[in-house]
Length: 68
Image 1 (spheres, rainbow, N blue to C red):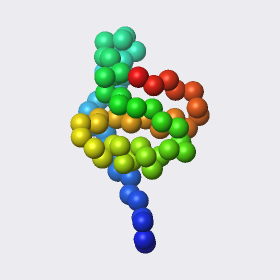
Image 2 (tube, helix red, strand yellow; image 1 turned 180 degrees about the vertical axis):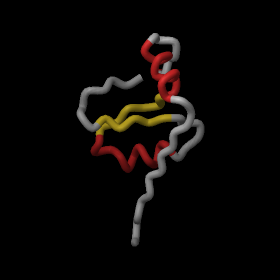
Image 3 (tube, one colour; image 1 turned 90 degrees about the horizontal axis):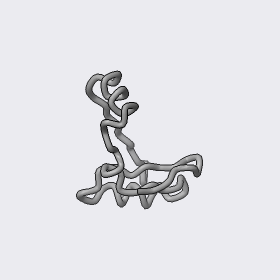
Image 4 (cartoon, one colour; image 1 turned 90 degrees about the vertical axis):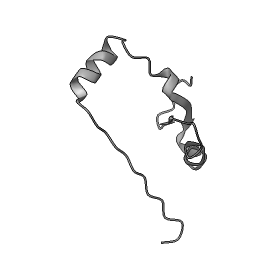
């Protein structure tokens, strides 16, 4: 199709130890998040995410997240 978009996700590693570390506050995720954007700005987020050195752009679907 014309202008078709594919989104690809991935995960790896054991989740329980990682989630436990996050819950204990041992890992600071804030430096990984470049930007938090509202759902209506997804095209801009995709364009931004394709630039280097962006690691993560979060899409806020509920309108309650606060940016870095």
